[in-house]
Image (tube, rainbow, N blue to C red; front, side, top):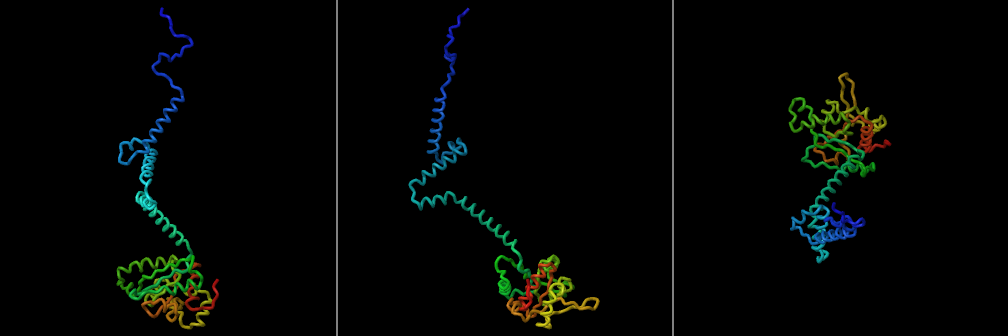
Length: 294
């Protein structure tokens, strides 16, 4: 029998080809590898795609960062700024686009959430005459609503009752005849400013509401006293007359609009409390009434 030549206290790894190293040696080697890789990153160039592909994302970022530092090292301040904008131009452009669109969206949201000072439609204006918005601006200033409020306007509405009944309405005016009455039924407009043709269509289409349903009795009384003949009525089927529109032709408001017609009328399509309030404000301003509106 062979005798065992190992000594009891001898390291069992003495004849083992895989030798264990102290932790300190492993740490030194790891640190050495890190230093070598760091040095490699410092001298990396963009042209060396093979070496770059061997690195992790973080290491590639460090390599590019090191290269940029080397490039701008001896540059002047002006050259550094030019290089920065050249190198980051697409990032800057993309950021500006995002900022512009975000700002526009925010501005639109803010603008659309502001309360309405007035919503009006101008019917049958011929755009060979330049429409003026000066009376509307004066109206806003009069009520201190030139800031923080919005105005809704439709100025390209064309309505003619006879042409509509005869089926001769122009095809390009189909939107006026279809969409406009629908918007009026949804209390979209406070007032409608028009010539007689447009008023006739609004009356026959039940767009124009009776004056008494919109303006208070005190306002109507003051209008009647100051301007006896400007409230016009229409006869109903039962023979009774209903006040339905008002002639504002002689007012500065109507004249300063620079409309393409001289006889200017106003009617009221909206029935909501806000429509009524805005309509009363409009009539107080247009006719210079003394009536106090809260």
